[in-house]
Image (cartoon, rainbow, N blue to C red; front, side, top):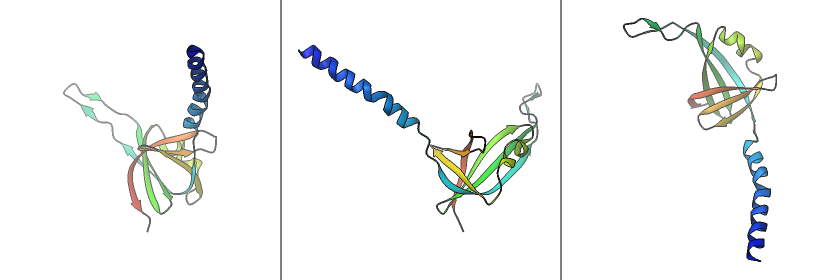
Length: 126
């Protein structure tokens, strides 16, 4: 009898487990405003006496988003064309779907995917 009750409890708990995982994975976006997209071309750096090139043809791209009176700056380093590869997907001043997870800011792309950035600055909107 005790074994049956224990098994029943385990089945009940396991039955709710997949739905808890699905709820945790749900991505909830908020509507912000894309204020600016800026890029900075990074120069190749040489490390050590061996002259090893650390980075080549990279662009640091900053995405500035205003949400609920706070301005967030999310940065990522892209190889190749930088803004042409991602920033041109949006129009400055238009609404944008955004979500946050720890120190990351995710921008919903028009193609249904999302762009991950690292939040490097937060300030009050003026």
